[in-house]
Amino acid sequence: MTTAVRFGYTPVSRAANAAEPFRSAEDAWFWTMAALVARRDGARIVSGAGRVQRPCEPDDVVRCLDRLYRQRRIDLQHARILGIWGERQAAPDPRAPRERGDARLWREAMRRLDWPLRAKGIVAGVPPAPVGGANVIAFPGGGA
Image 1 (cartoon, rainbow, N blue to C red):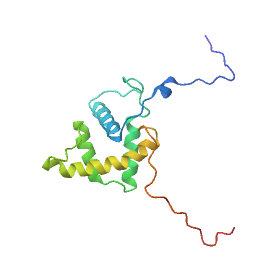
Image 2 (spheres, helix red, strand yellow; image 1 turned 90 degrees about the vertical axis):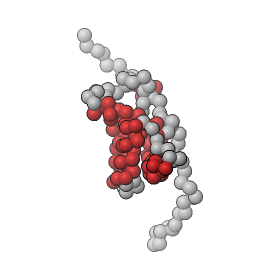
Image 3 (tube, one colour; image 1 turned 90 degrees about the horizontal axis):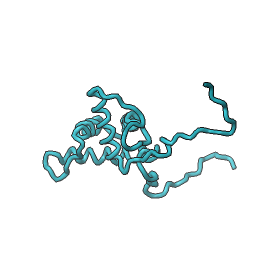
Image 4 (cartoon, helix red, strand yellow; image 1 turned 135 degrees about the vertical axis):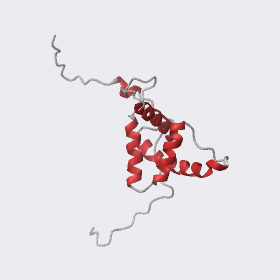
């Protein structure tokens, strides 16, 4: 059986409309790490097969982190801490003396990862405006 072409009709994916963004960068990171651990253990990651539809794939969050690393916004130490604590599915406790340094790196990494994830719609909410207004400086020799 062949399907007829319907002019003026554009199919709309219900999955894109029903996608629920994460509440925070931390939630997105824990979800990503759970998916990466499952993939490492042999599970097949299939888009749209979870209980909740998400607006991204786990690799999208990893790409945001990789981009921050290439821009030198985060260090290898940040990525290491995100990996260790992401596999544990818990954030380091700043009150525990042994976890205090990890907690500082975790907070820095989450703060820097938050904006790109919000800009892509992976985390709910609008990206925050820059602190303090940006000054526009006239370009010398700019003509009119």
